[in-house]
Image (tube, rainbow, N blue to C red):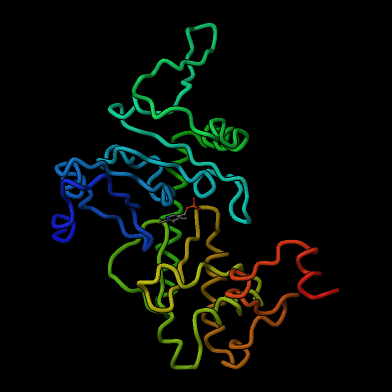
Length: 290
Ligand SMILES: *Cc1c(COP(=O)(O)O)cnc(C)c1O
């Protein structure tokens, strides 16, 4: 908080925050943060990445945020990853409404229309329609859940995360004390005693039929394993996952270190894949000279 006070000043435009943060810890002093940013003339921007932790329980406006984006692919069921069709609606407080893009949709009770007469608007944004179908899909999901259903989603996601954290911290370390919201980050630092890393555990989980959690993010946790079970996993699945982690840690380290053994692709060179992506068979043929 002292560092934030020190940093905030006349050049402060905005602060972007995820609450709860990536460790699944809720920033209870978010109102103080909002006051510091607002006193400097800045805006507080809510990264909607962790909405699964607050649905139906609180909202960014109540926390003092001025702008929010919704990661529909994280909380509201739209496709995620693989370069899929992303779309993130942005919501703002009333004071920022004049600046929103045009055209605005109007409705006079019988007809819909488009309104361009907004002098303070930032203008037209290129992808004005966005990925319309995905917005519709998320909207249908929200209606199908209802506000009580969405609150249940959060309650269950938070319960699942804390239950699993409690089971897994018997095997791995859970840095920072206290309850979590919808996710938690374990440290695989002590795997090193057996010549293993978090990546080895993740790869071996695949052999046991589990899609491995995110590894090495966030970087502030040594050998991070970030687990976000969500509301949809049953107690049986959570127990099976925790039992499997415990079983892997009792296996011959050599088997774990050389995993996966039961998949069609073995360990891929992720650095090479990022530096020299081969995105089509033509590129592959050219590279191989065939
Ligand atoms: C997932 C995530 C992002 C990235 O969001 P995308 O919409 O998937 O690009 C940013 N910040 C945090 C904290 C996240 O968890």
